[in-house]
Every structure is written in C-alpha cells, then in structure tokens.
Image (cartoon, rainbow, N blue to C red; front, side, top):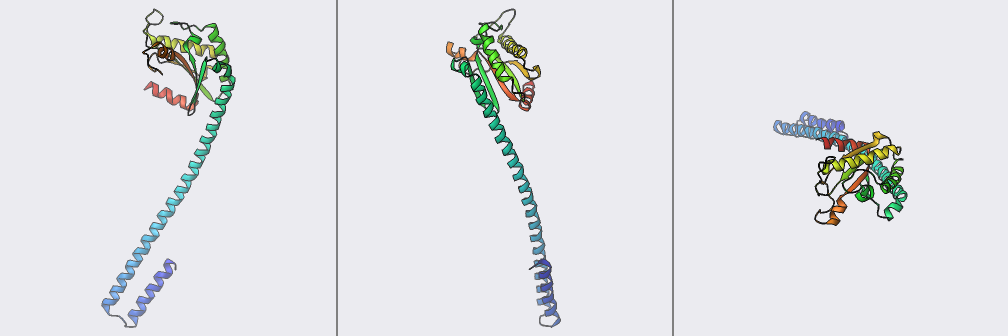
Length: 238
C-alpha cells in the first residue's frame, strides 16, 4: 500500500467513525493521535529509505572506483614483473658470476653491484672491469623510458680522510656521480638519472667483520616510477 493511499484510508476511517457518532471525543482524539504518530513514522521511514538509497549509490560508485584501482594495480604488477624478468634475462651472466644482484620490492627494481666490481678501495674512478659490467647494466636499463634511475653509493664504517674525500659521505656521493655520468654517456637521458650517497649510514649487514663490511660497500641502481621518485626526493629534502 502506498503512503498516500495509507493516509487516505486511515483518515477516512477516523472521519467516518467521528461522523457516525460511534466514538466518543476522547476516543476520537486518541485515534487522531495514533494517526499523527503513524504519519510521523511514515515520514521517518521515507527519510531513512532516502538515506539508504543515497548510501547505496555512494557504495556502488566506490566499488566501481576500487575495481578500477585494482585493475590498474594488477596491470602495474604485471608490468613490473615483466620488467624484472627481462632485466634478469639481460643480466643473467653477471648474476651467475655474482657481479650483480637483482632485488624487487613493490614497484621498485634494484640492481646491486659490489664495490670491488666498480672501484678500487678509497677511489671513485671506474675500473675497466666495472665499465664492462656497467655498460651491460646501462643497456638493460635504457629501454625503461617510464622510469627514473636512482644511483646510491654506500660505504662501510671504516673512516676515510683524504684531501679528495674528507669522509665517507664524499666518497659515496662521488662514486654514485661517477656511475650516473657513465650511464649518461651510454645514452640514458640525464633527466632520468639521480645520484645520491648514503655514506656508511644505510648498512645491509653488521660492520663487525670483513664480510659484513664487504656487503655494505656497494652501489644500488634502482628503477623508480617517476611519481614515486619525486615523492622520495621531497621526503629526503625534509
């Protein structure tokens, strides 16, 4: 029964009873009050229904948005996995020789190279063997035009104090810059390149023994989404 029809019928009953003298004044007022209460309840239910319909519409819109986001993330994950697989194939020989390691974390892909492959101790000049490996890495990374390439230099905690490198900060930055300049000369657009140094302050192993220090002396070359790279740079500036 519709709202209007319900109100019409209830009103008609009350009016008929009153007109026929079948009810006392008190009973009539009681019926009228009940009718008013029913009217109010109908209005409340109508309001609730309207609110629920609005919520349902909003939830449907949210579901559509979430489905689009899921599809985008799945496509991005497939792309990232394809890039990792391609890079692994291109650098398979270097990986097998232990010259480089590949790591994937979310939408970041990192090529990690041990210091001794690229540099002599306390130096920031690329060795000939390092150039050969880096050339292969550069060729593998060149095709990812949608990515920024961030190069980070790392050292162990053994102090250095020379005129050229007063501390490990300068050494790590110089090495990262050397790698970036080589990648640029290999044909990678400089706008895609970022060089930074962390010195001894981002170790991946304890510096308590020679093996741990060896692991910490490294160069990390990471493929980053352009938007993510911008966020990382802004965080580092804070």
